[in-house]
Image (cartoon, rainbow, N blue to C red; front, side):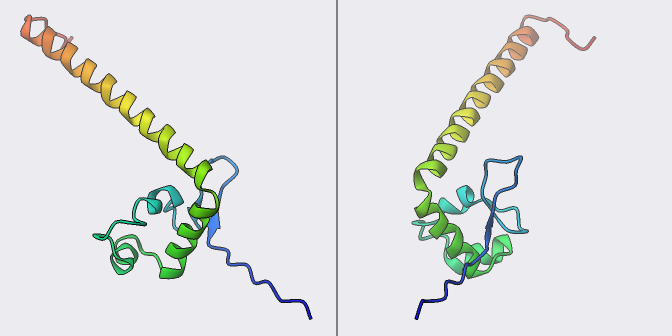
Length: 108
């Protein structure tokens, strides 16, 4: 007798996105992966704060482990993008402060 395989369909990826999410919740697997080894974030706390069930969180974590290299690459790309944006914002703020300190009025 062949076993019956029962899929658990908690994870989705929309065609226009490269992010995996909990179905109908919008919470990404990448986001939930950060809590895997964080003792401050218990299963109960994650579920309460993000409106998830334990099964959804465990499914996201299992999916992360099965697709770790792909998801870690997404996380690294997002981190690099965020760092570049932070640096650009700092440069813009410094330029505005320098113009202000020099008495240049940009108000139009």
